[in-house]
Image 1 (cartoon, rainbow, N blue to C red):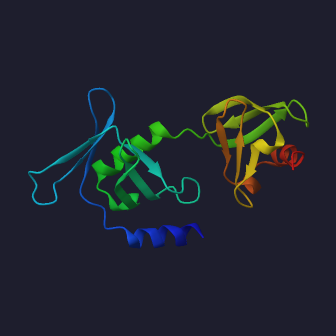
Image 2 (cartoon, one colour; image 1 turned 180 degrees about the vertical axis):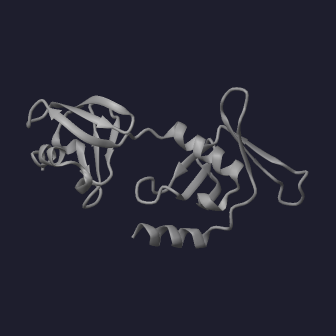
Amino acid sequence: MTAEIINSYSHQMQSTPPFKLHKNSKGRWVLTLPGQEDATNIQEYTEVVVVRAFPIEAPEAGISILSCDAHELVWIDRLEQLNDAQRESVQEALREREFMPEILKLHQVSGFTTPCTWHVQTSRGPTELELKGEEDIRRLSAKTLIVSDRYGVQFLIKDLPQLDRHSRKLLDRFF
């Protein structure tokens, strides 16, 4: 389904225009586009934001560069279509904006009623998260979950069947 949405949207958009994405002296992302009529009429947008259309299902496809007032300036069908410099700057901008550690293992939970504390191993190291309620575990697909802690940090369980048996057993108690 996601691929169909990306493809239909991609066909509606024009091809990715040439662009340069870089940081200014204040550490803000700046997008430079060549002018429509000629190369001397350069357009520059400050404080742009790079976002993924489908960050979990299709992270390498459907990326948008938005102006500070949320108007789409550039649509990128696929990261692989960009040259190395463009791809590196887009990926760096995405890394700065996105923070969703992946839960790789559940070591233990303080209880099976909420609120409770989970001790987990994530893609960014070991941590504890406090689950306020069972509604903070959202199923995105048969094998993908998002868990939100009490502070609003979201953790991803990308492939539920790939978790070890102990982790799956702990998670089963919450469904």
